[in-house]
Image (tube, rainbow, N blue to C red; front, side, top):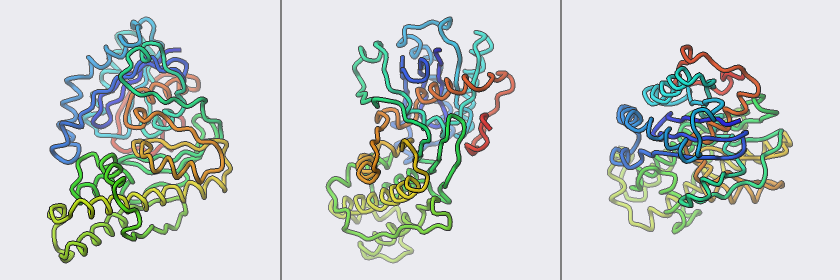
Length: 365
């Protein structure tokens, strides 16, 4: 079964074809990072306009790369929540139109849940292999249920226990900033470019992770997260380091830091952020005894997180390819395949988008 995935929830316009929920036939991503970098973050109106300009070429290229025609596509999976409303509307409108015109079944997919399914992709087709312009380090096998998933991105931080496809429980989630958001904000304070995750990770390589001591939040629910306090602690430490009081604006701090200080702050912040994520994941592992542990979302590309988690979890862990951690349509198509096994398709005229929607309110439930 071949599923076309369409993703446009934020600042990537993506389309992909996945076969039988494990084999990637194409993976096309048009990133807007260079557009939004000058603003230090994603501008919703700019993102939506960019999606409109490229959505059709991206979809057509996904079919072309997979060497398929519309007659070969058995279903369309599209992100309908959560995300920027304007961006979501572009992708879902394209999917709805194709579904109606081509009479192809349509499956709405939850973006955060889809990130988990990047870990279910274990094989690439000949078309992708021949292109040779991406590095694909695929897992040797799909994860086995029950699965403990740490979902970490710019907008979400969650620990989720999956008993099976569509049968899961959110153990904990962030109560304020998501970890990816904290990376972006700290990067901006210390003068590193957007997006903050890769920038801090690179700077941290030249820094001392023990140079500064930052607190870890203690939550009533052991599996909930909070990164707002960590972000504020970094801000206060920088203000103290450069000799200004707390009224000094954060936008003026970066120019007062030298490279050594900047790298040390990046490394110390990353250490505490990663330890917070890993500590809670390890605690949940020993409580729930899953057969597999996975990480998903943009922050899952962080090499320090991967290294520390593998050290502390006493079972073998395999990770999704780096290029499938950030937003893409391959994960959407993969999840769409499993939706198609359990649920009827949706009427394209009834599909709506949601800027905020818990995984507990997806079409499975």
